[in-house]
Length: 149
Image (tube, helix red, strand yellow):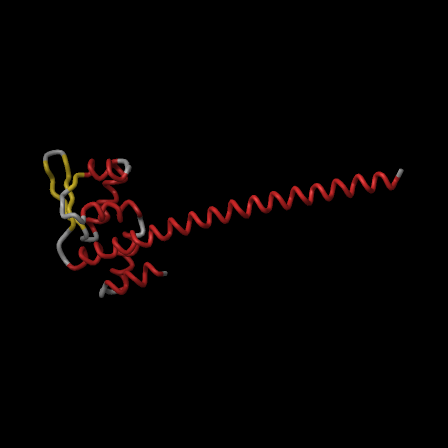
């Protein structure tokens, strides 16, 4: 919700365009590719693949989606396709939105870590409680067996 509000604040576009932009930027690979291209440098798919740890087909598909949305442009250089940030308001807004998303990603990673820590604590506490209940149950069984004798 915070991301969408922040993105809406930066953009003054119709709902369909905003939805498309939000969907495109919801993928970390596309966000990271745009962040790499934000320097103004042209990068080929192989350089993006190496930096982002993506396969060639996956990287090409993501870059195709960004190109179709008008956020990047490409240029063929022999057997390579080189990408750069497109000029225009949508591309500028997308670049600013990427910065917002990346900031929230760091916050989300911190939150995910805290949740995992809480989950581990919950699991440990539950396991301890289960062990204590098991001990009480076994003690009750022993006591009941003694009473029957």
